[in-house]
Image (cartoon, rainbow, N blue to C red; front, side):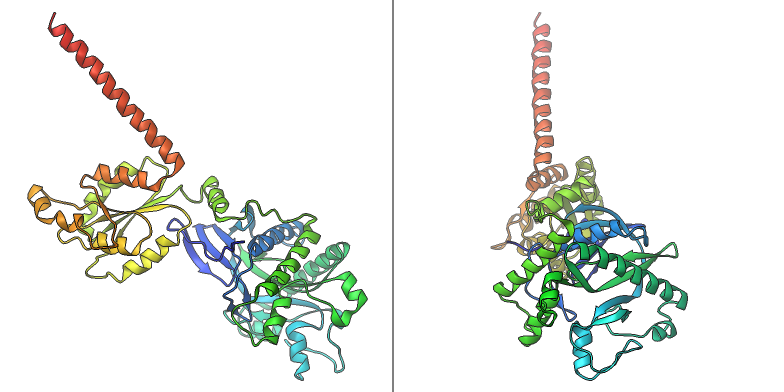
Length: 462
């Protein structure tokens, strides 16, 4: 079972990579969020990932966003894939609202060490682990690379938000938590604690990120708690946190531990949504197809890379030929000799891309660009040097034709041929159909020309 841990495309503008979610700018009002299978604990991303976790989190959050619209607006626009949603652009508030019903988790770990004041709230002595509070409490944290507890007073004093907005966030958080508790109770689940994140859209408060998922919440099964609340097991990320604490926080998790965690995530998914997770379309190909269907990306891309901006005219000839095809075209400038180190970062992005791509290298004289690109890229590279005349071609052609070992760049002198060779190298079924139709049209035109020629010459002999 393969995990989705990276999602990269030259066609997408990645604006943020979080611990689990990647954000991409679609336009000024819309962003796309992809929930990966990455695992993070204690502000660190683990080397081990959890297959299908992204879909579980995303589908649960989507469900809860729709369920709680009567309480507060949220940023959801549309779910276009089990792991992918489109959302309204919001200005995030750098405070997370943690609502707790029981003494457990990090709160209990601090309580064990003698702490009694948490975010301005004083807890009495003598409390036991898993003991319920008379009423849910809120322990806010700062939203940053490393989350830190903070009191409501300090939130306002530091200017993170106004007192009025904090009170609104507090009231909504408690209402969301109460709704979540009641819903989960009907499913035999206890919503132990959870995290809410807010933002502003047109200066109005809205819910963002996720809601009531096994990553952002703690869940217990009602029957476990009633059987023996002292040994109740968490059906969420707390299971992994505890294993990490007990094993000196390694960066990798054994298969049997990950399997047990996966069963817990799946249990919560199935109980809340009353269905099993459909894993048939949980693959990269399906995700890419969803993006294409929703016109977020094109079928593939052709990147025209110039050795100098002086080669732009040559590149524009190629671009003009490619424009009529359903692909993305971009033009970049990098010199193999002057800033060749940038080729490595370009190659990393293209090699990791989710869709097929081709590079056309445009560099004259001693063409080091095509070789440098093909030595680093796992996608096709086509040299199309911008020769000024036949003399230039005769002198410099060999720098494009003769490449060192393990630098498999091909060569097309004519810009139109370079463009059409790149289209064929993409090897995309839709493009193949278009190109086959073009080939058929060329043949038909030639046959028509032949017919007309025979007719004309026959008439000349009469």
